[in-house]
Image: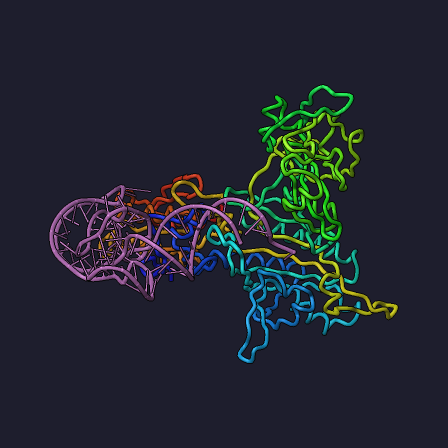
Length: 559
RNA sequence: CGGGGCGUGGCGCAGCCUGGUAGCGCGCGGCCUUUGGGUGGCCGAGGUCCCCGGUUCGAAUCCGGGCGCCCCGACCA
């Protein structure tokens, strides 16, 4: 029963003032969601229908590759999380039960499932195994944002694979990758798969699935045949112009000039002719200097990966004590290890002199200072990708990821099996996540126009919005009633706007909600014996003879 | 965690600076009107002005504290 007059579908003329992202505004206005608190959202009936469309696709495609659905609790004893060392994560919601026992609200389910597998799986004969569930996740995000794009509670499809070795994991990973491609294709999204940071998890591989859109939180470096999260992207830099080389570095006075722009302006050279020296403290190693070209930005993820250790920017006192005055630090004569970004190539750079109000020019790496070379800069638009293409950078929403976990969880939780030789080995795991809410929001971000949502058919809450322009009791209403009954009999998902409202309101609401096909039954059309069908995407119109309308609508939906 | 902004009927906002009857538009209810793009009119309902404390004869308004929400950055297995 989907009569709009009886459906809880509250639409709004204006978006909430504090909404910024397009999907946030439209989901609220179209009556899909309402806010409960920061990062906490209720799905109203129409929004929930779309979420369930995504979930149905996820279930079908997981089952197709032999991944079995189950369900694990959100509330869990803290002990499991202590064993994997994740109890200390700030985002993890912690609480106590009535007896004071420490509990957590799960932010993901590696611990729980690995625990089960550790108790049930004994032999290589029990492997491989792939399991998933659709379950609520709780994360105490420091900053929820943009409607349902980043929330503190959300549903995730999380799947896990259990294999006896890396080769098995590679097969499971590949299977999941194939399922993911089918899933995202079926959602109608524009998407791509990018290389991603394996982070501190230390896994052996990871990919993210990205849906490009303005509200995206991630930046993706794209070139034909190349896609990578900017966090890990590498590329050839654009060349930079350097001044003439000198036999030996020459000190220049730069009183009070501490920024790249100030120094390059004062010396009449481009920012790319400067060396930006960043003092950082590496965990367990102490103060070092990291150099990037003046027109480049340090990429913290790449640096962390290149160093194989965590680091933090050095404080002013540490810099003064170990190097020189803040703002005038440089590699020449530095008493700490120097890491030079690979993009610094040439023989005549400007760098800090490690003295107040002074820089050096004509600095030549290798001659004037020793270094270790790393690739730690953030790629820029126009850089050349490894395969030769020119890089563009665009924002995108992460809608899914796949991750080779290895034995990160199986070892601490004792998930092992016996191989053919009777040797106990840790199970090799992978994890595979998809957020249905982000898929819905991304679809809205990508498809919407100035009048509202434009759903891909696979995610639309209803396939057809049938609009009767007549009011209850008027003769034209009967034709709409009959078409509604017929479409329902044909199994079509139809939302019937049978409200006693003006035509403007009904037509505007239909465009806001954005179902793929709008059928208008009104006096004007009926006088010619037709109803009017309009595709939301593209606006293509067709007049359907009243007596064949049901059949024609069905045909339009399948064709 | 750093920076900024905002809390006043359901939604969007004004009023606050300069203390004195709480307002506007939309929405909502009734009647009439209109009937292919949020029609027009009349009548009406609806507000602890985020909370606590202080100043004052009197606080939405001034002061102090707290809470909530949003945005930017940091963070985001």
